[in-house]
Image 1 (tube, each protein chain N blue to C red):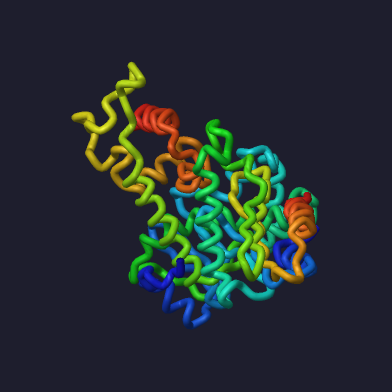
Image 2 (spheres, rainbow over the protein chains, first blue to last red):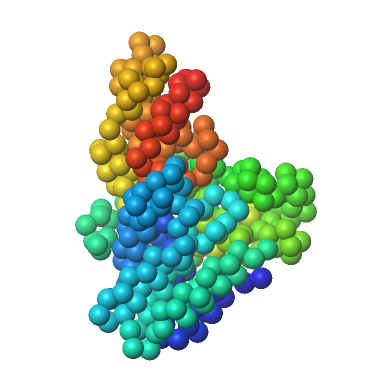
Length: 128
Length: 227
């Protein structure tokens, strides 16, 4: 079964991908990286995307208003002029908060394809 | 937001990381294991262990864990053994290991002093599963702590009036030291919450559940029952 590095190597095969990482949302720490990060800085991207993910998880408009533990969140997608940023939460049986993050070139990337592939990779990562 | 505004990493860890050493740094507050200057294991008496994380959720039986320790502990390859037995996937091993590492580092790093004992060449019985850059880990822990502080600043005091049998939330009881109040110190509070709920990630968990006054009240009651 694949580990973090193998999954990130697979993520680098997503069309239009510029960089990929696995991030711990409890701290904003990049647990593994591949390719390039925005501004050439994976560490800053991990911290920044964590702020976005946490902003979503703590607002009831996105999470249904119930007692929220973040478990209903699937993806956070940010589109900007030059690219796409996709964050995909990874479900684990034990208590952890991690997400896969990919940064895509706007022209080369396809949002639907990337989202589909990233979902598959998030499941592959925790395959027993 | 870049992390440049955060304080630089102090203490013995910065020096050992720069020298790219391998070994264990031990303090009464816990231990950090380094390989080539990167942090590959952290443990704290205040944080959930890998064993507790995996067994408490039912992912691994206590029997399997004990067997792995017995069979592979002496060779310092318990992690690899769990994967070889197909009890855990490689990804699961790495994720659970890193989850406990970050959580333990949250408690250990602030307590590390220059008097911490360093044992060169020491390795951990789990074996090398994955390591993280010491500087990046330090900055991430600082961010987590800053977020907890923000959370504390904006969280209204639990409202006793909405909950008839709740004790007054902000008035320390005479027999308790004020420092034991849930909201007083984020590190203490996080540690206490972790212990009460057997939960590895209470700091962020609270972030996820905010604003949940009912949860805060439940936590406070659970804590007060213990104190």
